[in-house]
Image (cartoon, rainbow, N blue to C red):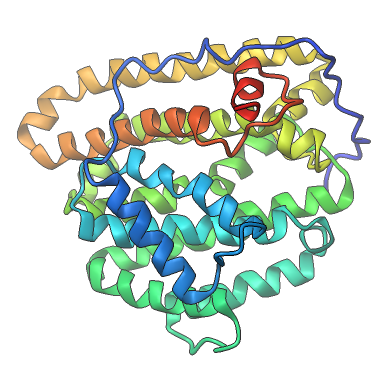
Length: 343
């Protein structure tokens, strides 16, 4: 089923590389009520018991590292909508960390699939949660809040995005981890676009921002191409920043840098340069497409709003990855992330 390729040990020496070359040619911003949002989100997570006040609680520390993503990628939507949209983002992180941070679970794909199926039932179908399970209770009330936010015409797209993320993306990536196999680049890119969960988030932000584009506009080739470049940028930027955490520390083979090193015989420094250059190609092409779409934006103002939120996602994801601390480590190959870990 998969190419039989032994996963080698990561070839990274003590050389400090830089990620400063990643360039997004538009400014990101922080939500004006970011502190209020973070505090309210923390209270909610404590209420459900998915984190605790114990200073040693690793889930609480992870939560404080990822909750700020929402304040950067959804910087312009009203706080009450951000509370629901960000709730979904937090759910993605909680669920992902549940099996990503526990190799004994992550490599047991039958258990992972059962967990995913149960979460979809509770989130999307409103199946009653197990009151003893904090995450299920968190998920159940999230699903209720989402159904109040998302219009019926958008709900099926949202559910499809969630299922694609879980079963066409994350579950398949767990199989590579279990089998200790590295996918070929073409296969990796196809799965990664689902595994990133970006499309599910994009489907949600239409509702969160009060945007409802005609289906014909969303299927317009340039709009689809622009969205795809954004998804690839967000996905592969994460691969760059999370390389040390995923590949070096956990032996997880599903990472673009590792894929290129294994299948193309490139050094770590070479693949870093290639990925950085490719990310910059994506944003350059994005700017060109935005310019080409300007006449259509004048006819359909909602398209300009849609593109604006996508730009906020791309810029916000970069800022979050640089400064959240989620990817910092004293032994990171990237000098910027080493400095953060020492702060």
